[in-house]
Length: 326
Image 1: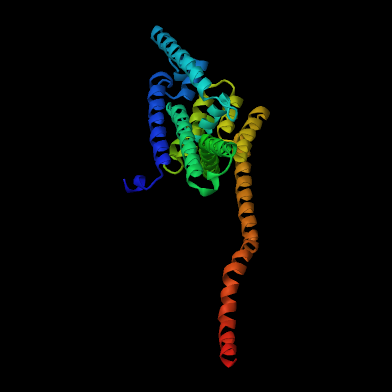
Image 2: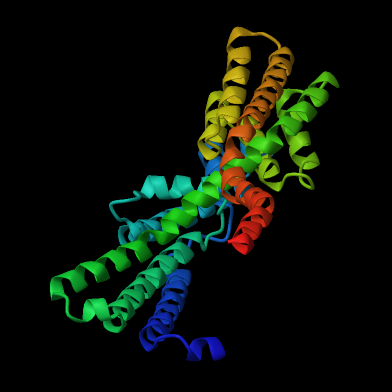
């Protein structure tokens, strides 16, 4: 209460209004615009390639009825999704890019779109409130033209509107970097599993289970890739989907290596072993490059913070004696 009482009145009003709009958008979207409470990506794969084949069951009447029921649910969800995308679409992020960005960020919840839209509206209102406070309270803007004030308000609104997009890009970058750090260990475990006699699909599933405690992000991606490798007839598409969800050079090299070994008929174990050594060498080279740059980076703090203190300690007594003599 103390913090809110000392905020400008316009910002407090904008915060309250934005919170109300966020709650309204969330509730309305939850009722009309959300997808069914199921994993959309896995469900889409299962329906495209057949629920019975995915579960290795016989095509009984009960399975066919369940398949038709889930297809109808997805058709209704797609209709609601098109309405929601028409509201959410803007020049800086199309529907496909938005869906891909959510997958790359790991936001698989059915409420991700609603939360994202509500956040954009909330920050838009907060940006307008902050701009209005700046225009009305700062002496510089009291005597400026109305057009300049309008441009400032539009600029603040634009910053508030794109702020969630910038946060989403930051989340994607952080997640990709984290997966890059976790992938070498997962690849070594995959090689060990294949040396023990497991195939590629079983090795990916096993590594996904083992990496749950050490790397949740890479575990989720490998689990989904293992399911797609089991279901899809074309392994190329499953590996391409992995690289699409994790746009990293390390994942690209892994997908390319596995595809080449499958196409040429060579053992994937040898290719993955070579790839693991290459990844370790690249990481070592990056570490050596950073270590080589360290002396040049230390020059600026050395000159700004260390050298002045040394001169003060060495020349300070001399300057004091000279002042006393004079």
